[in-house]
Each structure stands twice: as C-alpha cells, then as structure tokens.
Image 1 (tube, helix red, strand yellow):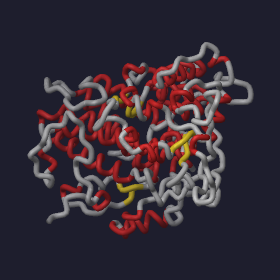
Image 2 (cartoon, helix red, strand yellow):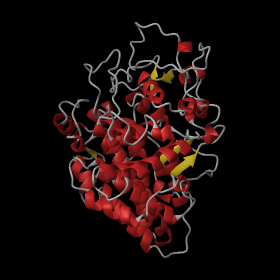
Image 3 (cartoon, rainbow, N blue to C red):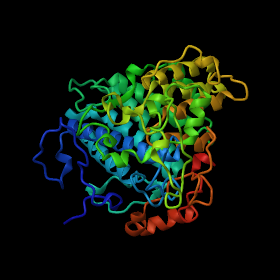
Image 4 (cartoon, rainbow, N blue to C red):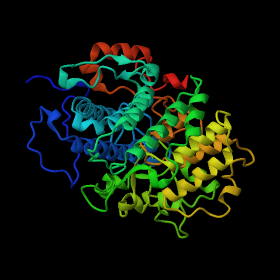
Length: 479
C-alpha cells in the first residue's frame, strides 16, 4: 500500500480520540482529505487539547516540579528517553499538525471552506511553537505533506521555524489577514474554542504573537512588535475570551486521568517545590490543585522531592498530597488550555518590566494574578497582592514574581512551566533526588527513538547538532 503519512507519525490514524458529538464517518482512512472541515477542525482542537492536558499532568508537571511521581518515575528522574505514563509528545504534535495541514489545504483550495483558513494557520503556528520549544530543530517545512508522497523530512532550524516565511510568526500574521479578509457567509463549524467567533480567533492570534515574541526576546529585538500589539489592544483580555474548552464530568470527554485506575492517578503527588512556593505565598490554590494528605490530622498538605529512586526508597502514599478533585471527580470544571487572559497579562507585565512597552507593569501583573485565581476557581485573598506575592515584594524582582505566578497557573498546561523555567530560570527548581541526568535539569526533550530508526539520515544530522541528542543542549532561543 502506498505510504501516505510521513514516517514521523507512521502508524498513527487520523482519529486518535473522539467525542460524543462526532458523527460516524463512512470515510476511506487513506483519503482523509474527504473529511468535512468542521469535523476535522473539531478533531484537531479536541485531540491536541486532550492529549496535551494528559501530557501536562503526567510529564510536563514533573519537569515543571508541580507534582512528582511515586513509581514508574524514570521520567521524573530525567530519563526523558524512557517515557512511561506520559512523556511522548512528539506524535501528538505531528499527528495534529498533519491533520491541520489537511484542513488548511482544504480551506485554500475550496472557496466554500475559506472560513477555515485563518484558524488553521493560527493552530499551525500554535502547535509548531509548542513542538520546537520542546525539541529545538525539528522537521517542519517538509513534514506535513505525507498525503502528497513525502516520506521523510529534513530538520529545520528553530530560528527559521520562528522567523522564516511559513513559520510561526508569519503564519500568525497570515492567519489574522485571512480572518480579516473573509467576507463569506459560511459559518465556522467544529470550533470548540470560540463557537465560530472569528473576532476571538484574531485575539487568540495576537496573544500567541505576544507569547512567541517574548519567547525569542533573548535573541531578537521584539520591543516594537510587542508595543504595536499592545497599542492595538486586540488580544485576549478577559477570561471570557480564553482559548480553552471544557472537559465533561464523565467519559469519554472527561479529563483522561479521571478515567484511569486509581493506582495510576494516585501515583502523582504534590512536589516539594510546588508545596514550598504555594505555602510561602499563602496561596489558597493549593487546595484546588491538591488534597490534604491522608495521614494529616489538620488538613495540611505535604509534598515530596522530585525524582526519588522508587526501587530503593520506601514511600507511604498517605503521607503526601494527591491531585485535587478537579482532576478526577469534578472534571467538568477543568479546561484544556490553549491561551488565556492571565497568560497574556503576564507576558505584557514582563514586557513592561523590561521596558518593551510603556505601561504599568504592576497593574498588568495584578490583573494577571486576579484572572489566574478566577480561572482556577479560587477566591483571591484580600491581602494576597500586598504580601509575598506583591509585584515589588522585598527580596524579589518583578520578572521573578511574574514568571512564578505564570508557573503556578500553568499546571497541566502541557510543558509550559518547564519551558518558561528554561527561558527565565524562575522559579528556582530543586535538584531531583536520584537524577539519571548527572544531576542536571534537562533543557530540551530528546528526539524519540523511532526517529533514529525511520528518519535515519536526517536524524543523524540533528543528533550531531545536539551533542548526540543530549538533554543538556540549549535550543536557539535559550542561548
């Protein structure tokens, strides 16, 4: 049978997850271009959001030191080439980028599907940023043409993925232009993020531009571009406009960890790093994110150092705080997060603190904190922003405070907490207890083993550029 998919995602089918709203399709699986665009848009948004939320809980939060694992924890010990319950985001990105490319080509070729062009370009930029931020140089410009016969793809430089034509920033600009140019009457269907509201897609794109520009601000002069977006004001400014979708209270669309056996869910507990930071800030969100540990007689929370050697360390699970009911019993209140008002305001607060925009950094920061508490269903204590969490709290810097608050709110948001730590060094992470990476916290994800087997020539070049596919080789924007 003709090879229709890039070997980067060989064996993965178009529909890797489903929702109760999907219709049964009598569709040739080898001709996914025939899928209706509304169903395809819905599939990409749902599958990526669901899978990256799972990855966030099971792996991203370990690297971010939000939580730690009691067992099956080679990943928590930084053996990142040994994913266990999570830690393999590569196929998540490539499957959904491929399916999104099918949607994009439909929109560009068929006039009645033109309304999908802007959202598809924006989603391509969003997912491409997540991919390259994790791995560095990756197959990109040739990587999503499997249905046209491309079997292997060269690795592209991260700098080009961000800055070149067809890259992240260019596709965001093109996506905005496509939204503004659309004059048709066909409604956008399958839109789990904004229910077809194209204006909100434009705000989403501009918030993503702010995020991308800040991410590369250590390598590029981005001040003028950030200032222009801020002056225009067309970005996600309130939680009502967040790029998120709700999980449901029961299968199949609840948060996946709510459906797994209790032993898997109970394997993940509060990290000592997260415990220390939340308690130092007197942060009530600890009771939303985690439960008091079972052996507590006072309703207290207790964290565990990341990366224990489970084969040599005896741990009593009842002595440590499990994930909160939001992640199991009450998942109808949980969101899959693509982009939010609080993240946007934290980016703008950082821009103000660094002099990129003429704005009140403290006010932007306070707004972001307030929105993050609201997002996580927690009342903001009256004195919270006047205490250790204050923008100018003694012994801190504004950027430290901004990134720490962003890190707290980014729990289960893919790998964002770890990525921002790599960019800024905040908050301070603790050494893991039994490191399998020579005591060093990784600064990139390794290319998966199947790449070495299936894309050998291009993989060898990429591995050479990363010191043998090392976890300790910084990506372009992190140099």
